[in-house]
Image (cartoon, rainbow, N blue to C red; front, side, top):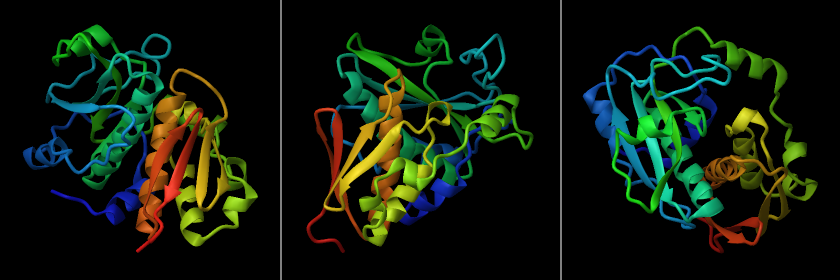
Amino acid sequence: MRFSVDRLVKAISERRSTRNFTGHPISAEILEALAHTKDLQPLGLASCRTVLLYDPAGFDTVFTGIVGSYGKIRGATAILVLVVPASSGDEGKLEAGFIGEQYVLLATALGVATCWVAGMYHHKTLATHLSLTPDEVIQSIIALGYAESKRDALGILLHTFVRRKKLAEIASPLLLNGPPWLKTALEAVRLAPSAVNLQPWHFDGTPQRVALRATRRAAFTAIDLGIAMAHFALAAENSGMRGAWQQEGNTLVFLPAENPR
């Protein structure tokens, strides 16, 4: 099953992170669609392979909480594991974020709920479910399943105390006054998930050379930036402007195609 860029972009506004899943099994048809990831576009900074794990009994033993069981993911019947070279550093994190978020949007389009999980899981327990070479590491994982209708306590807390930033807080005036495709892409970035919803990014430069920089440095910042880059690229393409990301030192640069469709 293939989804158009338009469908993935629509999933940006539909996506909701959840920690409480119902534990209901995922149908074979949807699992097959989730297993075919050849259409996901790589960023090209490092290699990143995806491994889909499924167990109708769930993976509750894999996940941990923030304090004790508080915030622990429950009832997820599938996990997507993002595996990168051990030596890939921030490039591997950017790649995992970029590819993983496309997968999140694919799952959303299929009616499957998701949750990015960068640290709250037992690495050794998870590693028993897959084969890793000595040169590979698990960069991050994504929990999958069907969402409980009742929101979890941690989700309510984050929603109450952490708000999404306004466009003016994440992008320069020059970009916000740029062409329509650019503002659409930045709006999509506003809806991108990030660790504790801190949105650690800022866009400046020009419409011909959009620059993205981190506004803070933490363990998961590079993954967050990769997620934002995926939202930006998909929304830009869906608005008629294809382009490519490249890395220039600590700056990530989006270069629009010379001849947009």
